[in-house]
Length: 233
Image (cartoon, rainbow, N blue to C red; front, side, top):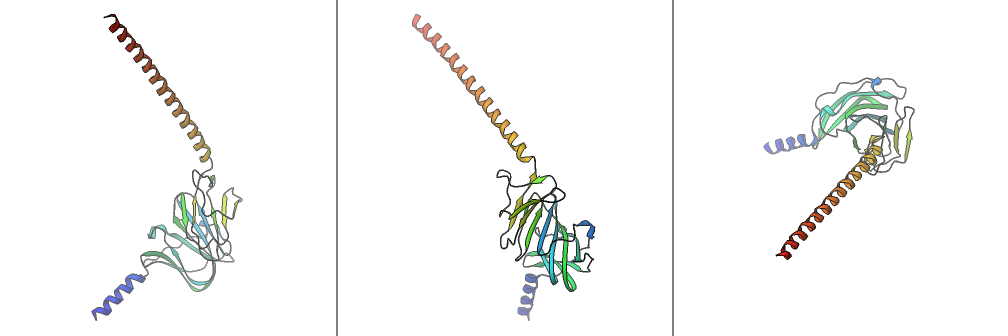
């Protein structure tokens, strides 16, 4: 009896259980509808809004990147006609990782959207047979070798109607996508800072050289005076 109890307990811990429900958001919080067979990530520095294409699914799961429920909020689902669809969202731990689980009453095709916490270093895994679009915040860019580049290299980079840079990967699976982004003027500011730093180094080095040279001259004068005094004696 104890043996089977331990087996069931281990199975329970390994597979996890469904925990608290997550309150739904509103479609107005997202740029809906999305694009079929494409996952879109809208970045803004502190959060990322995800709009994912779904086809004939009753259950969908997403990994929580930092394994906390607070990293997922305001879920939404709309069909291809842009109409709201009812669903249930729960968090589900499985083998040490936390997942968000969407459950629909029947097969669903359309778009699901949600918001997660994020930073200036964006990293996500990819799904098979799905394109990926990463929309940078207004006034931001990427591609500088010094400040960071997207990896792997996007298949295309374009600009949307709002002036935002959009990085596009066509079916990047199984690669992980990472994007470091920053203000558009950051590379210029970095160049100015580098120039100022070089000038400061040159000035300090020149001052140090001239100071050492002056001290050596004074030392030579003092040594000559001492030598002359010794010769007189």
